[in-house]
Length: 104
Image (cartoon, rainbow, N blue to C red; front, side, top):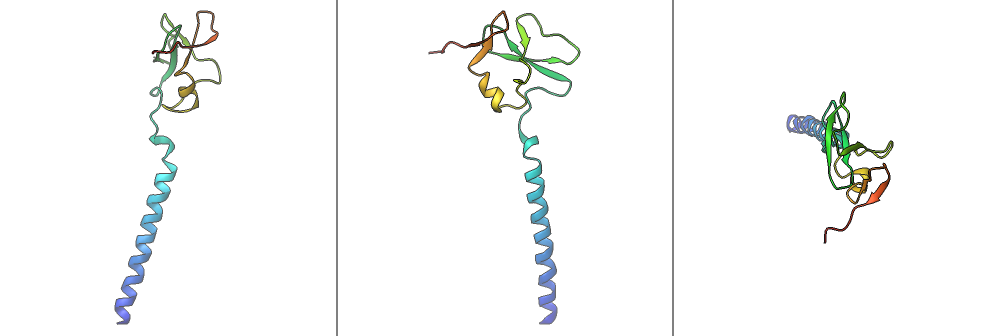
């Protein structure tokens, strides 16, 4: 009987280590599970005067009709604070933040 008890202890310990490792992996990768606004080597731009955004390669200027987000107000991930903020706002042709009209 002593042998059977000794076999259970290492199994429980191993299971505890495995569960602990999985928990740590999930908690530390939670941020990486969010969908990034743009891929590597790109930055997000905002449509001027209307809803919409796009991604532009780092070495290019925004295309006509788009502008860079104001400094400090750039969305990094879908659903983050700035992504939500820009869902109801845009920039006018002078670079001022304006409310988007309701779609109703």
